[in-house]
Length: 328
Image 1 (cartoon, rainbow, N blue to C red):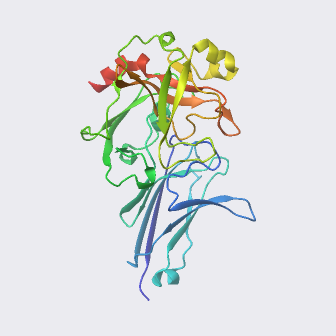
Image 2: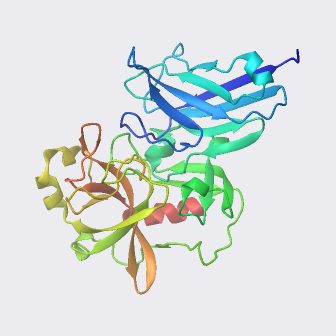
Image 3: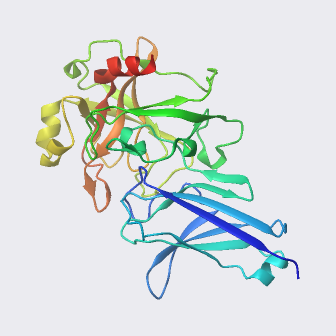
């Protein structure tokens, strides 16, 4: 009988993750959440075609929106029997999670030195930093440009590694204030028809000057029909409201907002949600798309964002001096 070598590496890192149950799955073609019909326990399943090489190396990076103890580990089990592997059956792994209250989600899947899936990047500080600690190693971050469909994210895309990540020094977990980070790429990007820059805000940063105006937000996060992830980016226009209106609409906003955040929303069940963190709130100023805010947080209802309430944005206009200094 031919010798079969099976090596599995699981890396768990704390990262910005959706808090719905289960979380958005960025790798649905390979990875699925399964609920055991007897115990009710949810576990993950990975399935790959068998290349019959006799040597199988699996690396899975996962993220979870909580802090795990040292003894809380992922349990990765090869489900396909060895004799079935020699017959060319698909390679199947089951993944058992250390906690059930908040489930991990895959952020990178590599099998036999081929990367099969990488979760989409985000740019809000809470997506890559917890207080002043980097949640995700720099080498695990990847920026994909020029794509609107994440099902086919790698085809004809411009892909860059991240050289450094710089959060705003005032960022604190669960707050909108300072929830902004700068990712420096390892190589320059050439702008093309489908890859265009956003301008930094050049006008007066007084929020009252644009109250009632609409901005546009695009992303792949949870949609109004309950899908945890959409494969083709959607966009929506949202009106800005003044700070008093936002604060009076719900007392919970007092914990999320500051003088360097703003609120916007249609209050009709549509808008940015889990998975859209870090998306830009952009406005067309003098014919040029300009960044005014970054999706930060929202009030929650039954474990996910409450889109009958406003969304909180970090006001990028208030941080433009810090952005310029960080880029020099």
